[in-house]
Image (tube, rainbow, N blue to C red):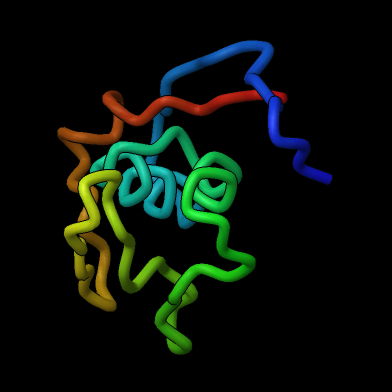
Length: 88
Protein backbone atom coordinates (compact mmCIF):
# COMPACT_ATOMS: atom_id res chain seq x y z
CA UNK A 1 0.00 0.00 0.00
CA UNK A 2 2.26 2.82 1.21
CA UNK A 3 5.80 2.78 -0.10
CA UNK A 4 8.48 4.81 1.64
CA UNK A 5 8.74 7.29 -1.26
CA UNK A 6 5.01 7.83 -1.83
CA UNK A 7 4.34 11.42 -2.88
CA UNK A 8 0.97 13.06 -3.55
CA UNK A 9 -0.04 13.61 -7.19
CA UNK A 10 -2.42 16.50 -6.54
CA UNK A 11 -3.83 18.70 -3.82
CA UNK A 12 -7.17 20.39 -3.23
CA UNK A 13 -8.77 22.27 -0.37
CA UNK A 14 -11.77 21.09 1.61
CA UNK A 15 -15.10 22.79 0.89
CA UNK A 16 -17.24 21.37 3.71
CA UNK A 17 -16.72 19.47 6.95
CA UNK A 18 -16.83 15.68 7.12
CA UNK A 19 -15.29 13.03 9.34
CA UNK A 20 -12.46 12.60 6.84
CA UNK A 21 -11.78 16.35 6.91
CA UNK A 22 -11.79 16.29 10.73
CA UNK A 23 -9.03 13.67 10.80
CA UNK A 24 -7.01 15.43 8.08
CA UNK A 25 -7.26 18.64 10.13
CA UNK A 26 -5.79 16.84 13.13
CA UNK A 27 -2.90 15.34 11.13
CA UNK A 28 -2.12 18.70 9.53
CA UNK A 29 -2.18 20.46 12.90
CA UNK A 30 0.53 18.04 14.03
CA UNK A 31 2.64 18.78 10.93
CA UNK A 32 1.78 15.89 8.60
CA UNK A 33 -0.06 15.76 5.27
CA UNK A 34 -2.25 12.84 6.28
CA UNK A 35 -2.29 9.42 7.93
CA UNK A 36 -0.05 7.92 5.23
CA UNK A 37 2.76 10.39 5.89
CA UNK A 38 2.35 10.05 9.67
CA UNK A 39 2.74 6.28 9.49
CA UNK A 40 5.81 6.59 7.23
CA UNK A 41 7.58 9.16 9.40
CA UNK A 42 6.76 7.66 12.79
CA UNK A 43 7.03 4.02 11.66
CA UNK A 44 3.74 3.03 13.29
CA UNK A 45 1.04 0.72 11.97
CA UNK A 46 -1.90 2.20 13.89
CA UNK A 47 -3.02 5.65 15.00
CA UNK A 48 -4.71 6.16 18.39
CA UNK A 49 -8.41 6.86 17.78
CA UNK A 50 -11.47 7.49 19.94
CA UNK A 51 -13.56 4.29 19.80
CA UNK A 52 -16.84 6.25 19.97
CA UNK A 53 -16.20 8.57 17.02
CA UNK A 54 -13.21 7.17 15.16
CA UNK A 55 -11.48 10.56 15.29
CA UNK A 56 -7.74 10.73 15.90
CA UNK A 57 -7.05 10.79 19.66
CA UNK A 58 -3.29 11.40 19.93
CA UNK A 59 -0.50 12.27 17.49
CA UNK A 60 3.22 12.67 17.99
CA UNK A 61 4.73 15.68 16.26
CA UNK A 62 8.08 15.59 14.50
CA UNK A 63 9.73 17.16 17.56
CA UNK A 64 8.36 14.24 19.64
CA UNK A 65 5.82 16.29 21.60
CA UNK A 66 2.25 15.03 21.60
CA UNK A 67 -1.05 16.53 20.51
CA UNK A 68 -4.11 15.21 22.32
CA UNK A 69 -7.54 15.70 20.75
CA UNK A 70 -11.11 15.64 22.07
CA UNK A 71 -13.80 13.13 21.16
CA UNK A 72 -15.87 15.90 19.60
CA UNK A 73 -15.30 17.87 16.44
CA UNK A 74 -12.40 20.34 16.65
CA UNK A 75 -12.28 21.68 13.09
CA UNK A 76 -14.58 24.72 13.05
CA UNK A 77 -16.37 25.69 9.85
CA UNK A 78 -14.06 28.72 9.50
CA UNK A 79 -11.04 26.36 9.47
CA UNK A 80 -12.37 23.82 6.94
CA UNK A 81 -11.05 25.69 3.88
CA UNK A 82 -7.49 25.47 5.28
CA UNK A 83 -7.50 21.65 5.22
CA UNK A 84 -5.59 20.19 2.28
CA UNK A 85 -6.71 16.97 0.62
CA UNK A 86 -3.91 15.03 -1.07
CA UNK A 87 -4.49 12.53 -3.88
CA UNK A 88 -1.99 9.72 -4.46
